[in-house]
Length: 469
Image (cartoon, rainbow, N blue to C red; front, top):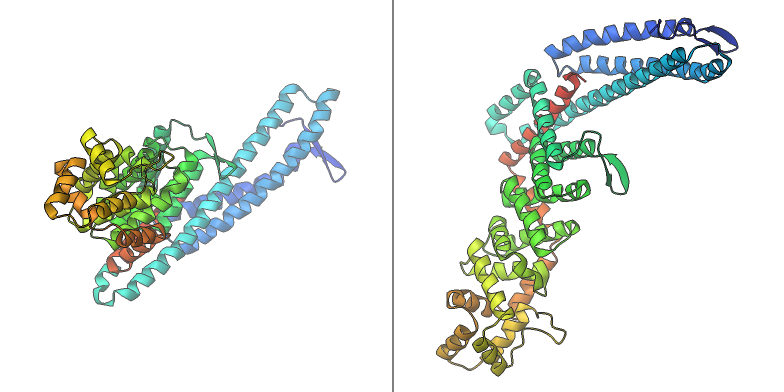
């Protein structure tokens, strides 16, 4: 650096001196601090979870940041004066440019130090977080202390694997970046703010990893599924928590949960802002009828865009699938039959049209929109009141496909108040998925799963502090 700024002077406090002389003191301090920091980092590689060493590193980083800021302030003061010196011919353009490069280099060094300090602080926070969760789990499993011992040992011996864990997470996020077709410097708008895309998504994956049953790496995997679906950064930020809730509530893998959310919303023409509502309704239906979240997802995906036209939206859709499930018609099978029922009503044969006209049953309202299934099937029930079973069977077989008759009869048997009560409960299902996910984790296995996610987050924090910048 001395050669770079040779010949440049700076006035500080009324005294004019050579810039390299003015910086001599602070440069010496920076050199000593970096030497001490290097020694601490060597020891941390042997014992990454040593809180005393981490505290020393944080103190030295804070000291280095202060010293580097002092140096930068002196350089910027010199730069202001150098501009005038250049105009007067007292320094050359080459000297002026060299000073600007020195400033840029110092700013980069400051940014690097601040990043390291932030990561070290996160590591210290993670140690406290994991310790607290370990203590909480330990209190729950006094009869199986060996499990706690295993986890404790894993935390203590994490040093060797920490860098690999951090590298694996970084690799997962690189896959997200590649899928999105962006660079590390790409910017996006999230909640009205311009942000670095990859930093934002990486922070989101870590945050979700610390708050849910899924690790940061698994959250990165889920982000990649959303990227494959063509979601932008805002949509990914909005949808990831929903996907994780669905996976936890339904005890299904992230790939399936991601597909259910993205494919269903695409097929139904829904906005990402409606994802929470849809997943809550699925969770409520699963807890209220004889089906699972996974089976409902299969049914919804099977029906696809056919369900767009039903009046009650996803609440009515889930209600019908729940009723079919109560009658043993579940998953893709239920979705297939419900799709056929809807299509038979929307596009009836001539024979079916004549039959419904004769009974006074209308599928569409005066504005040409499809009425609710409960109203249509309820009217059909009323129109057949007093008929024999054979007469009813003949009428139903004229309107619907023979392969769907069991499903039609199941739906007909539950029209009116039964249907309305179930649909109302599904409509008022806010928070159902979170509640179901919490219930799934409210046991020893669930607590160990949460602890495992926290430990991985802890490892990533440690690994990032040890990885080369």
